[in-house]
Amino acid sequence: MPKRAKPYERADRYTHAARERGYPARSVFKLEDLDRRAELLRPGLHVLDLGAAPGSWTRYAAEQVGPQGRVLAVDLTPLATALPANATAIQGDAFDLADEALAAYAPYDVVLSDMAPATTGSRSTDAIRSAALVERAIAVADALAKPGSSFVAKLFMGGEYDAVRALVQERYASLRTLRPEGVRKGSVEVFLVATGRRA
Image 1 (cartoon, rainbow, N blue to C red):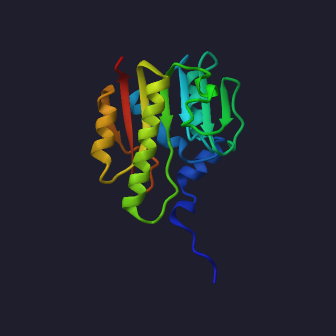
Image 2 (tube, helix red, strand yellow):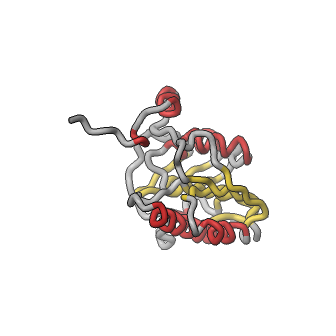
Image 3 (cartoon, rainbow, N blue to C red):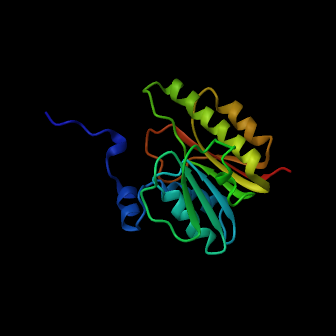
């Protein structure tokens, strides 16, 4: 009997559109929509992309910041796409603040995190693990982001939502919770999009 595909393994119109545009994953459309709504990326900015594999967010960010901008991608897994000259990928722990390579283009104008935990099937457990990843991304931004910068992080909705949102809100002048175009139906993921980091 053939194995039934998991819902997230099925190709949809976003998957096909990403392939047509040369991106390794459909997630590019989430960042594109967030960027359109919050005006996150513009020429000349320095961007840190945490948990960057397979590389769609990195490539999109590099295109938006242009040749005068810089993007540093960090992931435990190698990226699955070629990067333009203004983007660099390092394979390593995105939370290892002792790693001087993380500060290559610091201070950063934008810190991005599309990180998600390995799911367990328990929504409450997965939400707790997702919240922990966002908290660690906040710590990276605390160390490496500049005043006035922006922060984007994926979060699974759950009991930790209010506490995590409060952590971001105390650091940034503006915070929105957005569900961008491209998020699959039935997914519990949302994105915290914050701008105007306080000094």
